[in-house]
Image (tube, rainbow, N blue to C red; front, side, top):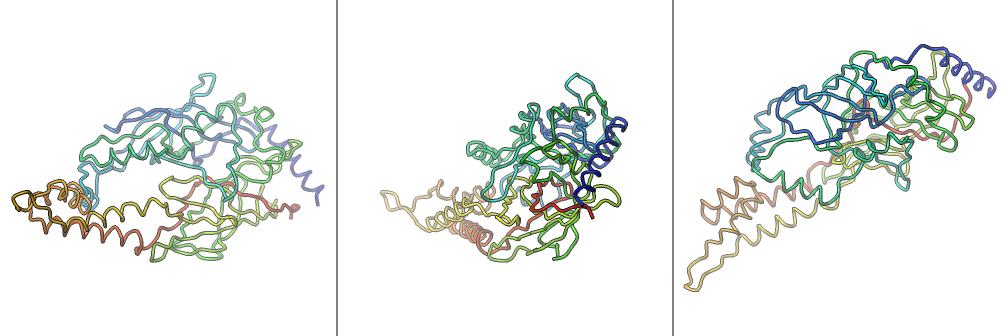
Length: 422
């Protein structure tokens, strides 16, 4: 059986060497990170970024990480009435719009320009690599990969988060994509890369040595802990070929991974988050060639604000940040202090404009601040109590968050065992 498997790998390598220059098929995502801030003003505004992850075709590199990608803002959508109303009540008169970018060309290291066309894609400001508890992220990055990886996959620092929060509190502010914003841009048309740029396998192996225990892939099946059911089929596609330590091709790019959902628990009341666990049992290397595996989720790329985490079994869940307790505590304190009345030296009740402003802001943001200054003190106290009650409800009583993994989510699958070809 082992001899059949080795023969298969040699045959696959021989076919790949005789193949024509690689064509990246439609539907493959290009993971692009902006290398500079882009102000969102109008459709057609230029955007500039770099590939964060290389793109492979079969066993060869088609587009190296770090390649320059050029594009433009393709869509600036409207704002639904409900979102606009909630935003105004919170004191934000410039709520976010649905903005998408489209990419038009890839520029390689020798300045070769490859025209392309992608579907409009939404940007994610902070994308992070989440790994299983107790492990460190495994990088397979070339020198070209390092800049883009650092810019795109890093947890925002405390100062950055504080600045973003203060900036968002302003009633009017310009919308922009910060540097490092990530896009998953799906190709609309095939993209053919020059052979001279694809045949660099010897200098940039996808996987080798002890690292050949995991597969880089992307999900084809969208998953959510709210709707997934135990036994439901899960499918993924390999995005980076797997080589042995002797550099024999084991699993080419484009191979299909088949598995199933093992456990799915939706989010529940009392702020209990959802849980999702799935495993892979088979990898289809080519039609008729099936390899048995036992693969579980080792890493996933996700939005930082989603607060995803992986336990030691590979189950994904939403980890509630400890900082969520801060605002309810502040709101409750402000609500309690709003009932305290100070008097001046003549025994006249003090208006306490600052206290009213705090009480109104806790409940309704900027609008609450203005209403609290105009109305009687009881109004300010009522707004503060309502805001504190809502904060406590949202933090401790409301339903938690579900695990959501959209199609094309980048994942890393750990192989516990590898058997022969069936």
